[in-house]
Length: 428
Ligand SMILES: NC(=O)c1ccc[n+]([C@@H]2O[C@H](COP(=O)([O-])OP(=O)(O)OC[C@H]3O[C@@H](n4cnc5c(N)ncnc54)[C@H](O)[C@@H]3O)[C@@H](O)[C@H]2O)c1
Ligand SMILES: N[C@H](CO)Cc1c[nH]c[nH+]1
Ligand SMILES: [Zn+2]
Picture 1 (cartoon, rainbow, N blue to C red):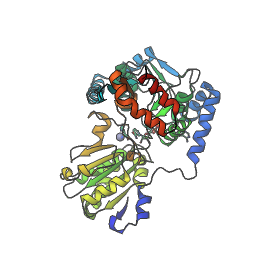
Picture 2: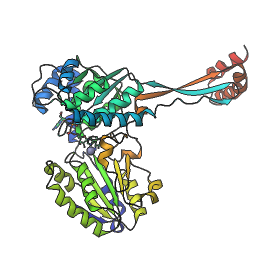
Picture 3: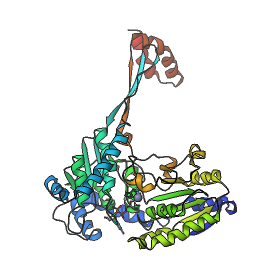
Picture 4: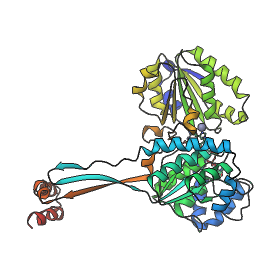
């Protein structure tokens, strides 16, 4: 893991350090554009051929139905079901409070304005399943979709080599009342949900994290206006801020937890002394050898770095520039700096708040913006599945109060028909 001293870095160095997941030669874009075009033109046939090419399986059909899902779910042990239900309950509790009706506002006598929630009707949920299968992601997407009241929920996830889906995803589907799972992964799943195919319905918005192919497909689809997306939620990343009150064993464990997601994940350690960095790196080296996914984690660690800063305030300045998906304040002094956080997807406070807890079960959502998109996007929430429609009601008193000003505003924009729509009412 490379180490830098913040005070030695130029502005250009910092810009380079905070940049990630770039596709400089547009290689991923090219692959993904071809996949999208193929799915658009050939529908299901393209999906069968990508399952064979990428997932190494010859599928008989592109989905599992309710009885197949129930059969797979029945193989999950009681202990495993209980853990998934605990996660379900906490995520449900946290997200349910997000569904709030807003008050009506009388902006002037007789003029009443308000917003009402309406669910997005058809949503597509992508559940990653390349290097690790993530049933937790189905919880993170399915629960807010259900709370919002979306009418149609399409779920896509890469098939296993036996042409089925992971039993835990099946069990979560039964918790969510989802009775069809499409065996489609990668950019082709995003394209299928955006265009629709013979088997898969076109949706209005596509949700979910994924690797660089999935994320690139989502951003391309968004620009076609065929479907909206939640956000770019690509390879996982974490930034850990540490000081003399931090525990190097915990720091290393948290860095490795995100690095085991994939070779293109990134972990950044920002610490107030070189000693803290050295201790944490020594721990990373110790812990990594014990991990079954050591090879993946090692590649991500090679893509990671540490920065020595003067104090916690400088650490937060760097973090705000990096805008991490996950920010861990691994210090007993976290209360000094929380109000200085400007850009982050989800934040973990103190030494006993591992990021893994948020990944699975604290209740917060783990579908979060990566690649510095935390500067502008929030993680998935119930709001992501809703539209907020504005309403206004104007009565006789209201049109008398507001009408003359609107007539004038229309006049100054030279829009006479606008003015007339008010005048005819004032004169009626
Ligand atoms: N940001 C978040 O909120 C968040 C949450 C969970 C996971 N993640 C990230 O999701 C990612 C999951 O990645 P994954 O790969 O395990 O699963 P995935 O489901 O995202 O991708 C697997 C699919 O990628 C496609 N693919 C693989 N190689 C390809 C190639 N060379 N060309 C074209 N398509 C190809 C295949 O279709 C395959 O089915 C990880 O990077 C993880 O860090 C992010
Ligand atoms: N850390 C991932 C978000 O970047 C979410 C996840 C799912 N399972 C384990 N982790
Ligand atoms: Zn994780």
